Image (cartoon, rainbow, N blue to C red; front, side, top):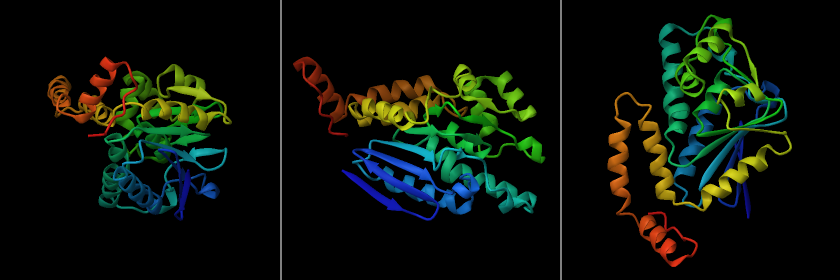
Length: 264
């Protein structure tokens, strides 16, 4: 079954148990503005409460751009405080929100992913890029720095040295180099981009929702300087033994059948 819903700057479509979110501002190369961020936030909140949705894919409309950056015209005359608020709200509503989301989010990077676009892709748990993708953080060319987590997540993904190079030179990398550096998980043709994402979500859908949700939380704990990832892992590993998913998974294994996870 396919269900569709339209907002002003994004479109959504559900295929089986996967929600596809498409940023739909092709005339602006899908640049992020305040309204788009609000629409994305609302969509992610709704999807989190929908037990029928097991994974999400986010992409951009057209073949030119995933998201070509933030909408510069919107903040060109901001004050210091307005700039801080812009970054803070973006972190809360989208970038940190997606990184800590309870369901796997896959970024399908088609074309340019620059500035806030690359930061959006990096907030996703898994990234698949089309062969024509170009990625970079060009903010220093405008006299500003990445403000939606780019300085932190890029270094986590590609290492400190490469992150320094990409940010201070504002250079873009192509899809193959992004794959080589660990910035994306896979590179495909544009035609096969969503199919590759569905291939990944199909595997996720057969696994325990409780365990997947917990694994996301524990992996992120290892990159949070306020938490000890190993201690969080021990705690969450123990809690797993009380879940219905664990009981069903072990029973199915012993009975040599496919598990039917209850999701609790």
